[in-house]
Amino acid sequence: MRVGVVAQRGNARAVALAAQLEETLSAADVGVAFDPATAADLDREETPVEAMADHDLVVSIGGDGTFLHAARGVGTTPLVGVNLGEVGFLNAVTPDAAVDAVRTAVERAKSGSLDVRRVPRLAAEGEGWSLPASINEVVVQGPQRGHGGGVDVEIRVDGSLYNASRADGAMVATPTGSTAYNLSEGGPVVHHEVGGLVVTEMAATDPMPSLVVDTAATVTVRVDGADRAHVVGDGRVRETVTPPEAVDISASADPVCIAGPSVDFFRALEKLE
Image 1 (cartoon, rainbow, N blue to C red):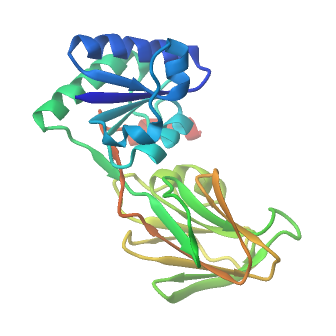
Image 2: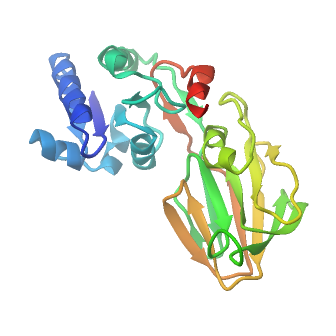
Image 3: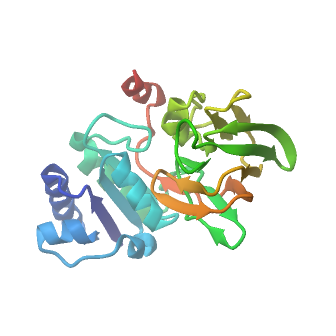
């Protein structure tokens, strides 16, 4: 059995916990691989995060950013999130509980009894391009936020028109992402066990309320009225398009598989206050 460990770059506490996990897992005859930055800190052989997709389990140590980085690379490999700050929506394991949580996940994986929570990702594509799958949200927006930077936005769900307006942009979020950028744009918080995608307009001149649609739906955001627009996944991956352009956003075929203890959703909500 082989476990990958991805620790927050430049965080001594995360590196120390990675070393502790290595000691515990090696004693149980489990192979351990480290992402390049952590491997350099520990003087170990490095393994690209993408190569961990064929491991049995991956552990993320850090915050939501570290978890998203790991999840982008490991595909559907079960992922345990250890949060060095407050317990979050993706990282349910505290540092003090990390060794026991990972040990338990390894034992269950060995016996074939590992339970995982499947979190949807979002696929976004247009003519001749596509983005890597996103966990939180996909945003289609004008060249810049604010006055003079908007675009004409038309939103359709499975071909049916929902709204058309001038706006900074439009966003489609997963339930996981509903507590992130979506919330700051006035969208609703959606419990992580609710199946659905959240459609939220961004500073629209003629807005409609946010809409929750089925995970099987395809949301098409058509942009026009500007010299360019951007499609952004999880605030990191970007595609620049030339309007008029239609962007199709839907649930990806490959979810994120989260292992370990279940997140306490309402406890995690406390960090939003």
